[in-house]
Length: 166
Image 1 (cartoon, rainbow, N blue to C red):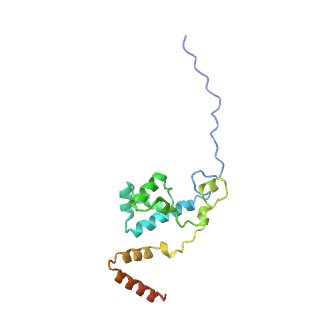
Image 2 (image 1 turned 180 degrees about the vertical axis):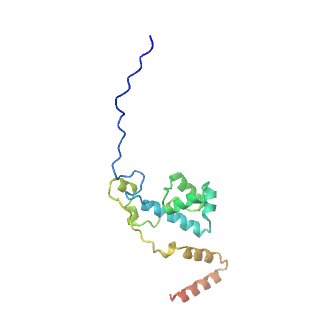
Image 3 (image 1 turned 135 degrees about the vertical axis):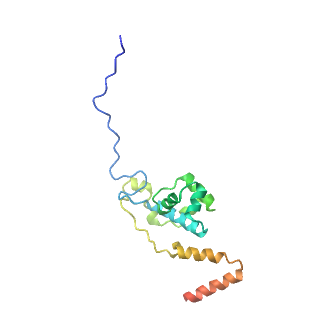
């Protein structure tokens, strides 16, 4: 006598339904990147630019494409712990560097706060910091390529005079 086939269940088991609007990946309900990820990305871009490194070169050092580096720098892709460790080594900074100077607004939008429903739409983070502009970064990088400390002092004095600072 052949073995009996087991009866199939009449209905499929229900899939676990995630609460609507509660991201577990850190994105906000409106789809925007988490402000902490944006901050970390900005710190990556800041350090990379200060070192005069291209996105292509950074990607090459990490085994990534420049497009992946771009996504990290915009905060579109989250940076995992192991990748952050590699970034700290390539960019010659401590891991904590990426979280320095993080705003209270960004801190208040941590993924746990998103999951709890306390943050649902994109948070406005001021983007008027002159220290984050490419022009400033290039000026600082060029300044530190001046080998003679006396010449650097003269350049600094000239810049202050031109800017009206005392």
